[in-house]
Image 1: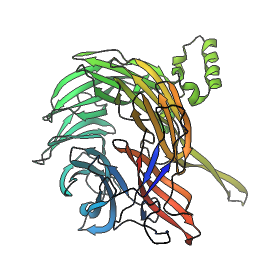
Image 2: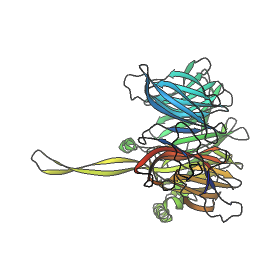
Image 3: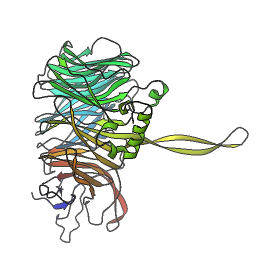
Length: 536
């Protein structure tokens, strides 16, 4: 079926190798789709897209891309099942956004979606205990969906009270969970998907030990995790450990610690072409006391990198945000200059100073023989509200309190490393007007040739920037994609994002409030999704 409309949202090209970036909007009949024919003849030749009427952004619609197998849209319904169940509905759309099937399955009412894992022809979703219903067990469910047929297979398990799943992956017939518990040692949990047997094993010795990252290995019989063991208030040791299905530690490789007073706040690990592993992530300067207790998110000082070959681990390389080449674009050249003057005056290296950003890490992307790590920077945002009250004697006084508005994303740093963990280059993209309660990645990377497109959605607009390592090929530019009908105006949006789908195709989705006085005086509130295509 031919596309219904073609719209251009690209920056003007200055390089002959890039002609334009194209946006396709599709809509095909579906039972959940909202559409509006506005052409004189009633033919569906206007720009259309999938729109599902919603009451608010608190609806539970989600969509996950599944490569050329299509995309899965799912949501929690209001249909109760038995004493402790609720029905979730799943819809499969093909790559032309035509609905293939719709199916429902009952899940535990206290469960919510947390992670997913994409296989060759199967999508696995992890639903975890929310604790909203008192007196319920800390259970979890793994739902596997055979994408072509819609066949659903459900596995269940039980975790310790207060245990939180921080990592999830599936390899062949086994699921692996990395679990942390406040005040107790973390665990590695594995589940045989065929037999339903759940095994739980300790990460290692020590009471204050936790998982930073975990992933199943190429064999279904082992998983590797980056583990932190707190030795004292200011010293934590880290190691890469490989666990088998019985919970035994097959290999434990110490990771070069940064220094006393520094902590690794997040991590990503990837296997390199020489059979070793590359460890990339963020580190922070340790804080203690009341300040640490009051932090809503963990603060980060910079990036780190380390490589291991066989049983040898190289020392970690630390890269303070202040020392990156793109730092001036993130915080301003004058601010960096002032900090350099302060460091010189006190005879300290600049690396001892920290801006302490909150960071959201992407998975490592291998590109042209390099390993790319993207770190999105954000900060919690509050506003103060005040009201007048009266004391016992009728005298007025003012009470003030802080209200959390969400997380303000303001920049994303992209860094390229070699397989030894050496920083080769860094670049960044400014993130504008993006305030959200959702801590999921906002920026999409699209490699092509030697160039990389960085893009995201904010205020209904698509922002894009093209870089070539530390060079800027195309500056940040914004464009507004078409809505469903002529005369549609975007009033507000919430929880909007864009993700890679397959090849050079992407999905954008989220909640939008739209008005169109030519159709109705009422506004409509919808959950939408579009298919996007980037072209050279």
